[in-house]
Amino acid sequence: MASSRRRFLTTFGAAAAGGAASLGGRAFAKTRSSPPATQAPDMFSPTELLERRAKETVAAGTAAPGAQSDPRMPTAAEVESWYTDRRNWGRWGDDDQMGAINLITPEKSAAAAALVSTGRKVSMSRVFEPEQHFMRKNPRPGGGGSVVDYYGFIYHGQTITHIDALCHMWDTDGMWQGRDPDVEITTRGATFGTIDAWSDGIITRGVLIDVPRHRNEPHVTPDRPVHGWEIEEIARAQGVAVEPGDALLVYSGKDSFVRAGGTYAGGDRPGLSVTCAKFIRDHDVSLLGWDMMDARPDPYGLAFPMHGVLFNYGVALLDNALLEPLAEVCAEEGRYEFMFMGLPLKVARGTGSPANPVALF
Image (cartoon, rainbow, N blue to C red; front, top):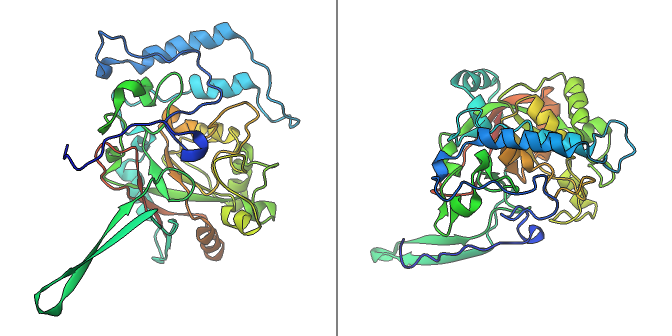
């Protein structure tokens, strides 16, 4: 490593980092199952951990239901089962680092390209304004010159549009595939489940779910989070079905919420309920893009009720997407499916990457 590069590894609070390494709050599993000291990390078997967790769940019995009046709300035990019994660990091999992106086959990408008819393009990226931006002018002989700039920023959080890598988060059972973050995350970067696993791009069929239009309200409110059954209802009303390998874009009206005076940050906020996780697993979604993220507080005491799809199901997360313009175009075009292109940077050992995802009609 070059001497000029600063090495550091620290733990941020959830409110500060908006998706930091330490989840905090309630965790389902009792202890994290790390590889034994005599066993190399790449020999760890996620299948063994899943079998062990299944036995623990049976032994634990039925947990108390969440504090909800809606009869459609699941019990705490049901929610736990979604994130323990239905994990995708080992589904594509114990050493797989692609996760649900494996569902985007060449045929799936080709079918997405066939959706393009008008060539209309819509960016889903917010304007990127780095916290640090230094400029340097370079004079050249004869009066010419050039300029270069330096960016300094943390893209994880609630501002920059970015894609989370599978190593970005974990619970007490470990990160993606049950790997031990104390082993896989070092001061030099991550060694497993990094963003460059998707360096060929995420190109698939995209489906937008327009929650505000369906509710006939400007935005989702704190007292009414988006639920999995509602996504199903909206998709049906829009005349579109969510299929395996799709990129699911859930528009909740974050920008309208902020314009109305709402504060959207790392604390309590409107967004998606954990019930959406079941929908994502049932439909084998490959990527979840959203403008509002996990709804907080969560009635089940989960710190990241929806970010769990990242390390449990291997679903890529497109955080802080700008979906208001896309919702307008979908309404104008009269269709809610399109070709989705998410192209993360090839960041060595990175936990994610800023991105400029594009929908092509």
